[in-house]
Image (cartoon, rainbow, N blue to C red; front, side, top):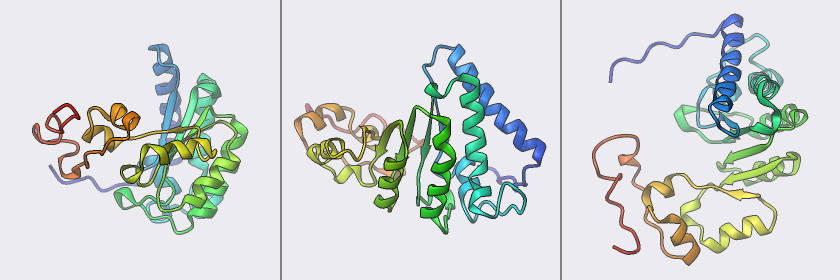
Amino acid sequence: MGAAPVPVELSEADIAATIEDYANAAANAVEAGFDGVELHGANGYLIHQFLSTNANQRTDKWGGSRHNRVRFAVETAKAVADRIGSHRVGIRLSPGVTNNDIHEADPHETYAELIDGLKPLGLAHLHVFEGPYRDITLMLRKEFDGTFILNPSTPGAFTSKENLDLIEDGTADVITFGALFLANPDLPRRLAEDKPLNTPDPTTFYGGDHRGYTDYPTLSD
């Protein structure tokens, strides 16, 4: 890989154009036949960078205070909802997750501020990639009125019963899995039959050869 470019602070015009890009992309997706879109506000990507206290070093209305740091997420969600309808829009968040060197000095307060800004938009769903703070998950669940989707912090350690308990006790409406699908080509069957799960190998993610792509065993192997 070549040298990465040095990041520069977006201008006001850049931010306005970027928000418009999100809305245009959402409209294109719906026109192409998608039922809706999910904004990726997690895992160190752009929306998450605005939320963070180390990536966002701005001193204008888009940075500094918690109210300013959540502004980009809220304005982007509003623009997309206005364009295609809030019933077609969800957002994914990852409170306390440090992917891509993200740091949040005040995650509890930041996500309380964020959910206050998102609630009036009437989004269809909130998808939480859970970090170390179950209490933030529960706070978001309580405050969000739409469908609440949870990607648990340690899904590989959960049994099918424990995942079902998260649904039955009201913690979430839907449980999602990511890396476990990479390692378990028959994951639905394993969950249904409460069978042991293959452990994902992160060193094979995102590239390489067949290893970690076609060689994870199924229950039938």
